[in-house]
Length: 324
Ligand code: BDR
Ligand code: CA
View 1: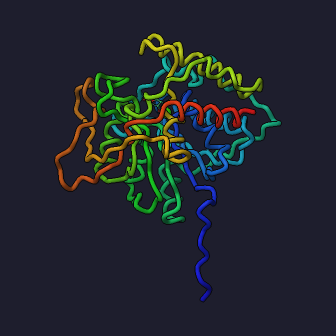
View 2: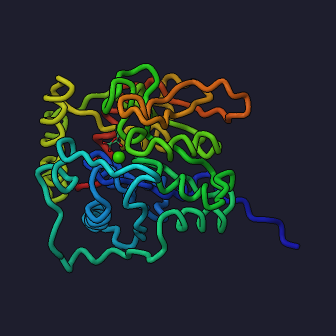
View 3: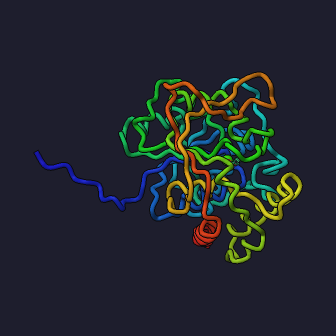
């Protein structure tokens, strides 16, 4: 028998992004679709920042904008596992991309391949078909990932599942102690934590270490894609001015992508915790994470501090390359 061929360690890393596009999801998509270190195998959509049809359309259009209409897009959960869907038009604009609306056809850009396989099955099929190979980066509510685990998918078969969500010590951005992705679908977050589906998390404690300003975006080239990004982020900055009192914005999702997969050296502190997510009826508490005392609950690694200057420089140079 022939010896098994070792996959060279610098081969692009196979990745599936799970998104609720969303302004910061958009930036993460642009970077992931163009990063030479990554092999973006597919993108799965989940309702969250906006309704699922906006998420799917935005995702397809953004991939087209950077010449990646070849990346399959799978449509997933239109609502959380048990709760009513809440969206965030005040944060991300009426269709998810701030002052921009990604509508209309441009034949030159090619058309997205929307796969008929729904997201939870899409994730499960990839993990099963390529044991130990696929990284899943979830940047929205965990509904698709949880639905897959509830359908029997074992994410031990993935190389890693990473989530942008939750907060430990940082004040919440949705309730006092709750972060948006966790608050939209607390049952999904709890089910993933209980099942040990998540290997790593990037909570607000990490993603809010870096503030991006409109000035930072001045260096982007004068292209259509760059104008879309600038107009979307201008809306996001306006929201942060009102809601957070900062002159700039947090780009949670691309900070997670870079910190987790492209420049892990920019994560300056991490902790391991056994976590649970509150799923009670009180809307002020549901979605908050707490430390679990259950010994059988798997630990998860949380990034809690980021090298802010390094991350800002890396994100801006990646984004500049993506929209050039
Ligand atoms: C998370 O919530 C969404 O608004 C963002 O896209 C990000 O994934 C931050 O709390
Ligand atoms: Ca998101």
